[in-house]
Image (cartoon, rainbow, N blue to C red; front, side, top):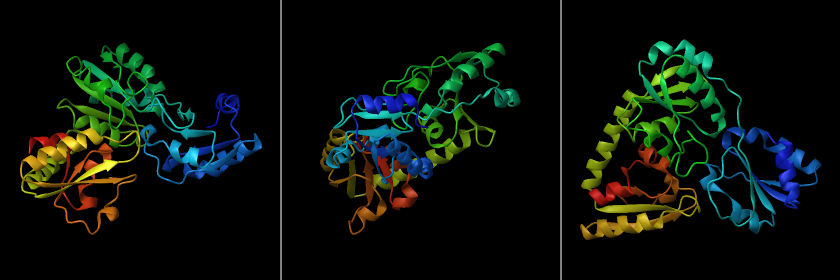
Length: 308
């Protein structure tokens, strides 16, 4: 996980103390990494806050703790300005999707496909493209707006796919975890297929998209009848969307609704206890909009609030 190049980068920046930021799934390795850094003469403070992406940097905390840099594991650069330097270890995984694609080729009846993935599996796209083209497919890999690499999508950036929506008959996500491919499925009516490297299955997300569309429709119906709105704003620098929140509040108040701006770093249902709210407007991480069952209230986006 921690390569010689990253150690060289930290030492080149003169780092004597770093804040180690690591996703939940890799936390069992946090102590090992801290130990490696210490042997190299670099003290590591392990951040135990959840880490949701490069939008969730703990650079302000690093500065307050006297750290020279953040060592951020599992994501690619996103934020141009930070309080302290950030060294990104993207945690690339060597994975060839070709055996799985060969097994499921009969489930890919489309002549043209757009391939997408997350940072860990970016290296798999070229292998998939070469294989599919050898089978007569036309294959596209799009350039994202916010993400760093061709074919890479984020929870808040599906442009690598949507920029090719007119060219491709279907989208193929290669990797693991449903969050990213389902996020794409909600932005397009075209088929979204998920090649799951963990289970080895190829899944068509059309039914799950329909299920989620029904949940969204129900949330919007409840929102239209709501009077008291909580507008969720994240204080994370990479997730803060204050302008969208202000537009949503202004729009709701013009329609005779009551709206309150609610700010937090990590937004959880427990932090809203005691507040009398009928509906939430999510102006923070897109993941929150999917958590209607956790918050036990309809959750809509800022754009949806404008359309009520």
